[in-house]
Length: 336
Image (tube, rainbow, N blue to C red; front, side, top):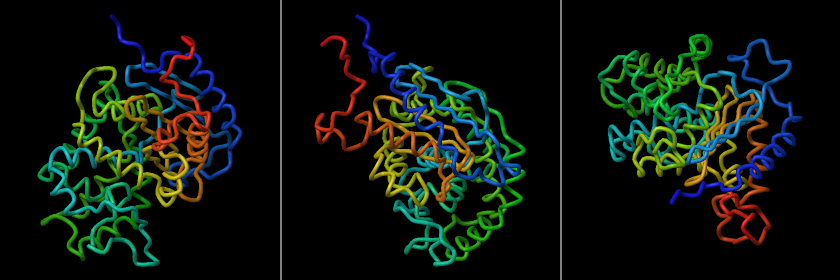
């Protein structure tokens, strides 16, 4: 007896997603990151890709375009560090609380003199230090890209050299932050700051398309098991920890509002990408470069807001049964 798809009426679900896509598409406000898109974008692309934990795929818009992962690398590097070094050691060097990197208010580090969490630049630099610390950056990057390839269904990903060079030219604030971390004893002993900051930017410059990210998000939704290859990329415990911090810290200074309103573990990047993970159901990826004042993709945030208006995907929607009239695509209404 064959197992039923997690979304039994996928065509009906697809129509609903297409409707949301069309509602969000006109929102072209926002500004692309000037380091990555120095000439701006006259007609900014928009793409959505959804992959379920059993491999059903929905693609809309400019899903063939490639871009750099940027801060979407942060939960992945955190997961790799957890797998290789263990939770106790990782969190000797990185906190777990939401927090902004505000130089003007002296809030670069938390009260324990550590990066607030792994989802911001200081925490990402630290996560990278904890991955294979004895290896050079070239070998470390190959290792991280292999993990990304497994997350994306066995694909070989490319490196975006242009994005890396542009980011390194604008790296002064992250080097300043790394020096503050070093001064406060946050780093492991014998850390090379140049190597640490450079590796952060190397990981941010991994090239993907929207379908790659949907597969990666679906792997996290499937508790680390790739829906296409069956490879166990991360342990259940590691994925739980990754999703917990994506929910509380994944959307920069908008994280609290986003968790309140959307309630889906998500991570955005300044190239315009965003992943959203609905455990035991699907991974969602969105690409649209214009950013809001927090550095999140405008269309990506609006898409996720409309998604939870239509479907019971907010983390706490289950508390209310169907009192708000939201759809549950897990249920096959054709049989009623």
